[in-house]
Amino acid sequence: MKKLVLSAALLALGSSTAMAQTVTRLGTEGAYPPYNYLDESNQLVGFEIDLGNELCARAQLTCEWVQNDWDSIIPNLVGGNYDVIMAGMNATEARAEVIAFSQAYKLPDPSAYMALAGTDMSVMEDGVIAAQSNTMQASMVSDTSATLIEFPTADETIAAVRNGTADAVLADRDFLVTYVEESNGELEFLANVTPPGAGVSIGLRQSDTELRATFDAAIDSMKADGSLNALLVQWFGDEVDVFE
Amino acid sequence: MFAFCSDPATLPQWQWMACYLTTGSHFALYRSVLVVLLLLALAAPLALGMGFLGALAVRSGNLLLKSIGTIYVSMVRGVPDIIFFLFVPFAIDQGVEYARHRILCPDWDQPVRQGNDFIVCAAAKMPLATDPLWVHNVWGFSLALFAFALVFGAFAANTLNGAMNAVPRAQLETGEAYGMTRRQTFRRILLPQMWVYALPGLSNLWMILTKATPLLFLLGIQDVVFWARELGGQKTGHYEYTHPDWRVWYFLGVLVFYLTLTWVSQRGFDRLMRKLNHGQATAGGEAQRKAAI
Image (cartoon, rainbow over all chains, first blue to last red; front, side):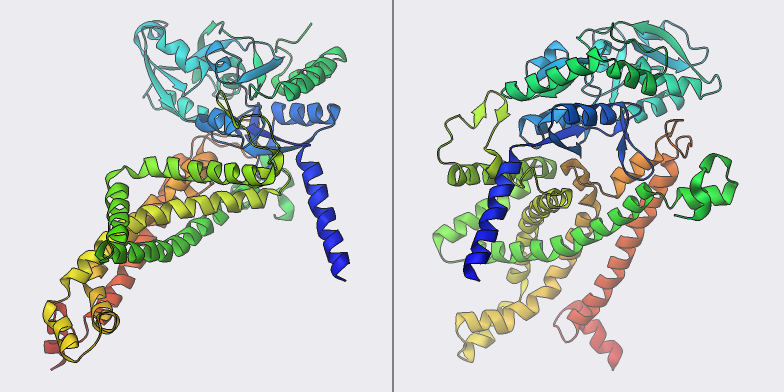
């Protein structure tokens, strides 16, 4: 009996350590439709969830999603709470000093200013512009002469424009487009801006070169057979920039 | 939830509402209320325990204990709470992982800190990457609980120490006159009598603790405030149940929740105070005696 328990315990221990090498935890924000968001049944869904699951299947990794607040998403990656970030994150130079990036899985999103209909273009220079904190757009606004106000979630930047706290919001155009289309003319785009950066990519720890190569290969294979483009069109519509 | 919920877009008003309020994410909101109550139920006795130990340490004749207690109380009280809530869970988490790493993976040759990265072997992860989600949640919750107990324990220690000093010296002298030892005087006379002096301070602490629970959200635990913000935000066509910005309603609900909680606690403390004052040589006890005549 004792032997049986012991060997069962050993087996459990052995299998758990063997599996520990292969579970990859994917971190995402879960508040950025259609990239990643929580649906009504409290499940993570979105472009990146579908993509991440497919990449893991191709790379033969066991993956698990973890939801994490945007502001602490990079500290928790380098602290080892999860292994990968897939959260609509653009590979910018500032971030690349702290973490590593895979190749892009979505071409650089044009960013756009969105405001209440009839807002003058001049607010982009001398108005108050809302942006989500720690985003590329927040640093883009701070490089202009406009006043920047930051919010922890993207949703709150839209609310700020609606209630007049901000004159306009700067964010990914693909995120804003649903809000404009569904506002019955209340909201409109002011202008597009081309952002810096190599496009939306997977963020990884700089020391994790092997995992990075695995994901790069999986992205390559999805680019090659056209399934990545199909996913992009499925989630962002026909006007999205696809890979050649 | 209900059978008629299959296509929300076509539902009439009340049915839509019924379906909307019973979605999976709304149940997560209702559960998060229980999480907050659970945290309070566990953090309050833990903080009181820490406070008691802290107060004993501060009053101790042992110089080492006394200085540990004094450093703990004055340091935690002097640093903004939010810094502790951000620092303590991270520090414990990485500390535990580092210790496990040293024990479980002795032949690991790479450094733990590589640039910005904190890397321990897979077996040292706390919890393991293979553990189910609830284990991760319980671990996160325990870290938060510990941070709350640590911070509020320091305040409680100060309150209890003050209350022990407030018990009239004559009471203790009587005990000594009867030949009781220091320990007996403490247990039989000081301890039962100090609560009446400690209660106003402790009830303050409880109220502050209640209101501090939204800090859970900073630690990645999805509490009431997280869900109010998440569910209240505008839901576009990507969602099944679309609605404009409803945060004002959700936060109104949160307001009612916290007000109810503090109101109920205040009534509880009032009753407790009446009970503790009974037969005491305090103004409250005196008033009770007069009323009883």
